[in-house]
Length: 111
Image (cartoon, one colour):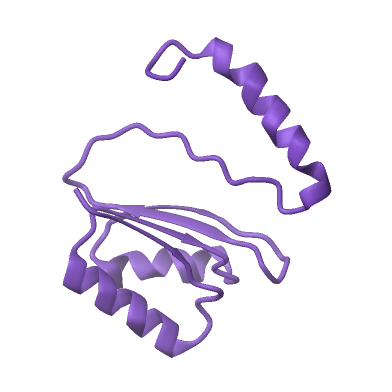
């Protein structure tokens, strides 16, 4: 199974969207993760049809560098946990402490 992860630095330019669509059609990943989409939720979610990946979850905010999107194909069944780290370096310790506290709660692989 192929996964595509890309820091796209904004989906506001037509060329960026064209490049993304081309990569997905050439490599046919089952999962596509985009960070720094810099677009509103409805704009990012509408890409699923051009990508041919029907499922999408987005996290968008109003900051210039924000925005996450996860697209996936109907043919896969999966469970995964994603952690998007604290963007402010001096606060990273908070995220690591939270992960340390959550680890003992799990009962699956890596727990």
